[in-house]
Image (cartoon, rainbow, N blue to C red):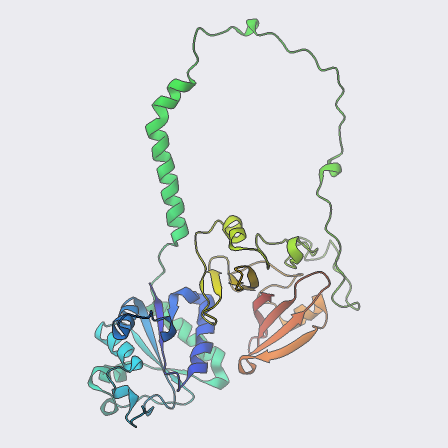
Length: 381
C-alpha cells in the first residue's frame, strides 16, 4: 500500500514538496509515501504506471504553488491541459477513483476556479484546502499530519511479524505430526532399573576454589574525555545513571550501545533487530540504499559498499546519546555536553543542527526544531 501520494509540479514547488515529504516521513514512513516520477520503471507505459501508483494510495496531497495553473509547455500552452501532463494524470486518477484529495496551497497560492480547469479536474474545487506557509511551515505541516491521520487507515501488519507467525505455526504443526514417532524413539528399552542398582559416583578429591563474582565481569570500556573541560562528567548517582556513557562497540556513542552501528553491514541489522525488511533505494539518492525501522524509530543509510554510513533516530526511539534524548531542549543539551563544535541552520531556518565530536567516537548531530526548541532528529555519522 502506497499510503500517501504527493502530487506536485517540479517547476512550481519542488522544495516545499521535499520538505513536506521529510516532515511526514517520521510519522508515516518513507516507504508509504510516493512523490517522485523518478520511481517510474523504464519500458512500461508512463500513464498506466502513474494510474497504478495512485490506485494504491489512501490519500493524495495536491501541492499547488503560484505557478501550478499557469505553467506552460514548449508550445506556450498550459501544461495542465495536456493529456500527458503527469500532474493532471495523477489528480484525474484519484478523483475518478474517489480517493480523498487534499489541496495544499503553498506561498499564498489560491484555489483555481472551475472554469480554469480541464473537465476531469473540475471536482478538485469542491475539496477543502489546507495552507502551507514558509513562515509557519511546522504548524501548517502538523495540520496536514492531523488530516492524514483521519484519512489514511492503519497500516497492515509488517511482513516480519507475518513471516515469524507463519514459522511458529509451521513448527507447531510439525511437532504434532512427528510426536508419535519421537515418543517411540525416546521410550526406554527393557525392564526398568532399580535405583539401588545404580552405582554411586566417587566423591571428588579436588577442592573447588570459589572465585569472586568480579573476576567474571566484563572489563569496563575505556573512559571518554568530556565534550567540554568546563562541564564536569556525570556522576553514577545522577539522573542518567541507568545509561552507560562509555564508548561501546565500533566507536558507537549511543548510551548502552546498539545492535548495529556505522560501518556494519545489513547482516548486523537482521541479527540485532530480528527484522525481515530489506533496504530500498534512498528517496534522496537513488544510488544508495536506506532502511527505516518505523517501530524502532531508527533509519539506516548505506554507502556504495553496502555498509551503514549514517543512522538517524526519530520518534518513537527512546534511547539517548550521553543523556540527550528526543524532545530535549537546547538548554538541556548544553547542560550535559557543553557548547557544540559547530551549529548551523537547516531547512530555511526551521531547524538548528548542533554537532558534537568526541575523541574515539562518531560525530553526532542534534536537530532542534526552531518553533518548539526540542530535538526531533538525532544523527550519528
